[in-house]
Image (cartoon, rainbow, N blue to C red; front, side, top):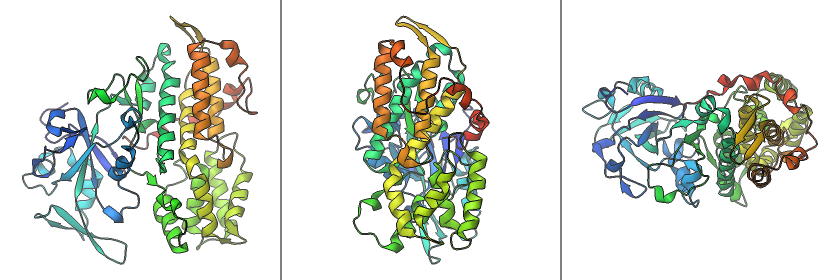
Length: 453
């Protein structure tokens, strides 16, 4: 790393912020903030910082910090999640501060440069905040640039897979198990991550250097795979309320839950894309036109086992003849929100195993493993997680049970006869790998480089 870069090198940029290493400094050089209960300046060079705008209640989703606060209620959360552990206000007005003019990389960050280009932007150096207009009745809102401090990782899962040699393929079931437990935990506290993908799974090859006493030896010598980047996550708190007005339902669905992604963002479950499209255009276009548009878009990105007839079934469930029924959309979403991340998990498992060559035999001190069996089992499992109808997707508890059963009876006991007779679903076929390998969209992993953190 170039030591002449003050305030950090840009590692990556997403829709809601930019990540810098080494970490940026707080306004007033506030190094007194604590991380894991220990003063931050003791962790220099062990953290990265994410620069984002703190728009408070005007932001479409909950702030990542708020989500992280909820996650910290989970026992041993650091085993499963890589989340911000501290935050502070950043000074970015370019007048003798630690970032701004002195950071050679800051102008590569769109959050920073695009904000400063706004004509309605005003800065108050006394409170270190900017004022902008919002779309909410032209109200003004003061906001700061905020820094989130997050522990460094060795790499993300997409990079790890590129470097993985066949002798370490047996790490994958254990790493996936860790992700499954993490997703189960956030479902239990009513959080939807919304962006489960290879680039958002951070890998530590060894135990973290930060506060090791909080980490257990989860698997001996197995890299730790942790869910990261909760920047577009959602807390489904509104579903806990017994009575919600129609106006609040519509506002929540349009502005909080169903973000305006394109259909090409295929890590999202199909029902999400369908309903998001309907909410956006149902007042402008007829039901017939919308169905045609949706089928065309989904056909371009469909998986081979999808039943496109489900599109009609779903739309008929939430329409009253030719009018979208918001109450029905709300009830549908309330019923199936907990299958959202399960779909994305399934697609990620699909991508991991479809790119592993066939006919891999692994020799270990514990025995000889036919990795084709493992590959086929996980590909079949992914099919049951990526079902187009969320009611038919496996629950996260069932996924955890299957993987635990698999690890105990095949990895630990090396029971090949058990695995050869294992049938999780009616979709299982002996040539499942050949069927799945024809899906070109899943082989093109460049399509999934949608975020660098």
